[in-house]
Length: 145
Length: 145
DNA sequence: CTAATGTCTCTAGTAGCTATAGCTGCAAGA
DNA sequence: TCTTGCAGCTATAGCTACTAGAGACATTAG
Image (cartoon, rainbow over all chains, first blue to last red; front, side, top):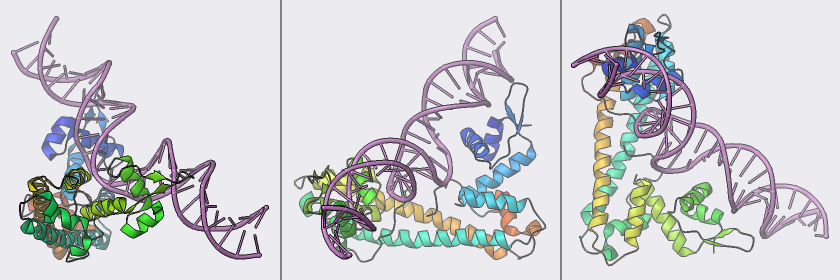
């Protein structure tokens, strides 16, 4: 049996994150030691590794919840799991396309900057006037890192 | 003078978002009508358009705050603005690279899926075992849409 | 035995909004 | 003039996926 710290170290998930996953019901409440500390067995380790890897691939927690309940029923057809993965792939591809448009526009801005004063800086100018853009990259929003 | 609704319609920013920008100090508090409603002039419209476009290019609000205060001082050299834009470009490029790795891995998973049962589904299997992956795409996290 | 580290619960904070509740302002039609 | 209905107001809470902190207890190394 592993304490939460050992489990976290083995799976590469941080300790508070493990507790968070338990809180939102992604991980079942584990056994407790006599001193009320969480104790995890190999099944929990496996489940947490699954979550960790899915998160690394960008799946949102809701999708992971679905994938986990699917993996608990090995006899079902895997079309549902396939659909979730395909949706995630499509989301990733859409995001890449969008970011490439942003990249182009940012490159244009940066390249045109003449390194003079703000008054004639292309960066500031272009930001203030969307008409100078090549594409309708509008519809973005989403944090960077 | 524009009411907040007109301003929002003209710039493509939602009404609550305009109020939010004011609240966090990105937009100055505007004049008010006799009935306490916000009234915006052309300068505010321009400033909001600047914010909108910067957001569309993925700049975080903190960076936009810096860019705005730079644009208020046209005599300064534009190297600071240039640096912010370059940092944003680098962030976008890093994110694209990361997402491309995810895309590859997801494609491998989806292609290998034999459309049988969950028990022998490659999607579920690969998610449970990171050793089957080609790359260390670990270090991701970030919502998709 | 003591000190250091690990773990416990609970709360609040992050980014960038969005949604809701319950109120008032204002313009147009009957 | 009345009323209907949309637009606007404030304030608070919610969203994702965590992360950070406080203050108390458990466990372990020396």
